[in-house]
Length: 401
Image: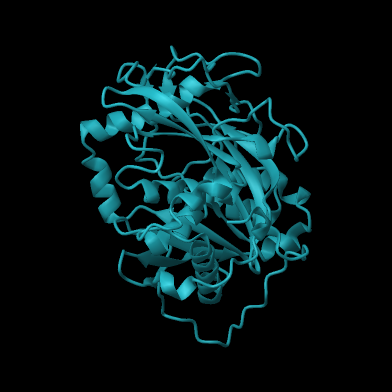
């Protein structure tokens, strides 16, 4: 996919097309890839609006103190030999997945910075606010064959908010997660610990705890088709040695992501599910404008034997000729179609009214309407602050508010 495809037209004002409230909304949205194989849609290059950090107790901080710095090992012709099992389970502090955070952290950032958004309240009133991970699920939907999803949508002061709902199947799978899978999840975080330092020009310290509560999140503005987007996504690190097209401290174009996967024995594109893995890497990275994914290949004993950098814009080339490959245009066209579907469906401005979009592999996206609990997700503190134009949110909003 050509890098220029994301800038096929001159920049335009981020104004959503008027919604026709008289039109009868569609009841479902098909997901067959063949329906979305047209030209690549307009996608404005993401621009960073700000950032925030989450500490070891998962508390919000409106700064970049959790940002880490890419520090790969020296290469002398040998593999890094990272022991990904080191510290498990004694030095592992996983995030409590029973706490459903929704959009809360992103909403805190938005309250603190709503007066500084370019275009002002009028731009936000036409925008879609969500997490990058939710958009990733939409991009991969035409090719997903195993995991369904649910997205709750509410309109408030003109803005459409999208927040994921854990499906009953996903919850059951999480609660029954086998020990081996929990250890494999740890290995991915441990790989990041080997590759990232807390300060520029320093070395990683793999002797500490692996605490998955800690996160650095970038907040971005973009547009897909005629849909203005404000979304946030976790970023693993920044590369202090790479040039940046964004002013510091963003260094946007120099943030690689890091992933760990099973050792490929017959070349970089060999292995079960490799194409699907690349699809998820591409979707996550392309949305944020991340240029590279650094992958570690491990052996069955849990040691990283080699590293490989995958440029985001070249991932499609690995699957272009595969029978079960994927097409970036299909992914983006479906995402744009879903956003239009949601915009045309959720027309009533009410933070307690939720349209629940549901999808299972092999089926179309369907929608149902709900009032208040258990699906309402915009917290009281956010609605009241936006309504009364309060200067800031409470210090520790409860996810259950």
